[in-house]
Image 1 (tube, rainbow, N blue to C red):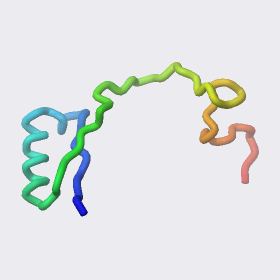
Image 2: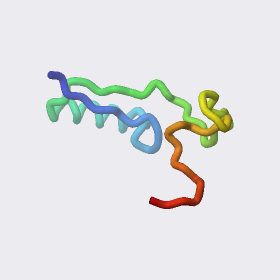
Image 3: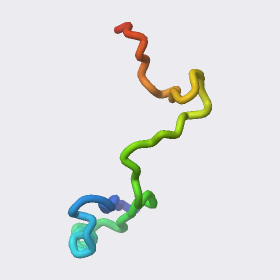
Image 4: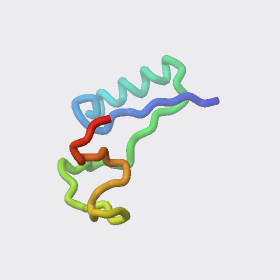
Length: 70
């Protein structure tokens, strides 16, 4: 089994010199690989609606907002 970790792609740790230290350090600790997210640009707001549920725009995984509690 290979064990790896996800390297940061945002924030101060994502600078090239910091990533080099993180990945070299991970290798020294015995990790087999480092992965990097392919989402290099993450929006601060998403206006797209979820198209597969009613009412339009609500995700089937979204919590109920009917005002009732369990």
